[in-house]
Image (cartoon, rainbow, N blue to C red; front, top):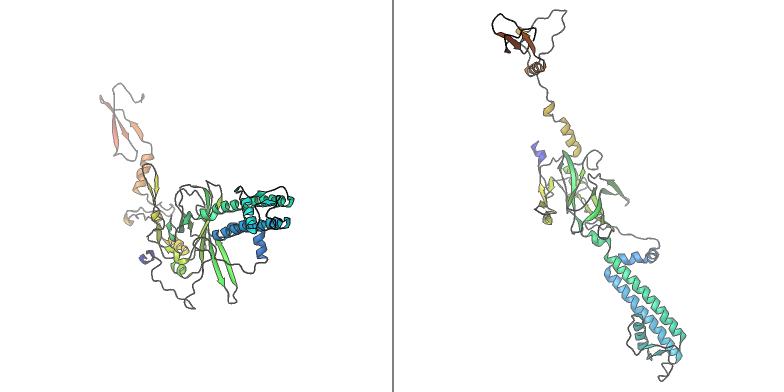
Length: 430
């Protein structure tokens, strides 16, 4: 029995035999940082979907790609309108006739000057010697269009940069999970636990913890089935002011109820956990995810305490966030552990055998008499004596002193007290 309550670790040598030899290493369904390891292929009208929701597309792309797109948008707009100004100057004869006193644009005599005029117009840079004249209406219209487009580009760039900097993924990196999950005993039940903590000083408004068992089955034809099983969390809604341990009780109805240590080592599943919360500083809803494989679930371990109480504060030591300690935990499944607890006798309900009287001292019963009741224990007899009211007997004697004998019980004459009465008191007055 002692061998079933040993502490184990994932490095222990436990040989698990399979029919087809060692199983190949499978990729995670959800990576440790929370991203899904899924690649989409042959999506219908994929580019159209990206262009239709251009704002979300630019928020999701990388920073270097976003900077490249925004730089090209500015440069191409400057170049496009520079070409327009160069064509207008060429058509008006400003390039051929350098001494024209009524040009469309002042000091625009080449393509380079037209490009610089476009850049200075869109960025509102005024150098003082290039400008627009009132001689060409088409040039005034082009300048107006360029100013409006410039406002749209600036607004779009600023909005994308702010949305990307305030992305939920950045806030999710400040809320982390422990690198491993543990299985230990809590309140007489096997429990699966993992730890979640907020690394920032600003606390969260509220949070909801979820957990799922994800199993993937690959058939011989190449078809793959993915099944999801929800875990019942003991404390689902928490306020993450300090690091919290989230627990799932392994009881009837749990996907891990029939899984022992040996079954855990050879099983193929993935524990996907998430924490959805609201930030109190921005009011934005965020979600942090991670996953645990069977080698990352430590059987017989317990998270170390990382909260200490000082005179003024509660101190949290994040050096112990991922540290665990070994404890004594049975290596059997939750089902077998509950069955053994039911078979174990309880000391409170153990039968008590009352002593039997000796046959020679037992009275003989007549055939018509009812069977004698079972003898009462001395403790019960004493309790009955204490509950029975005492009787008082007063005797009148011829002596000068009248004595009254008070007995606690008519049947027990050994325990009595003597009450002395005065001479002038008679029994009738009593």
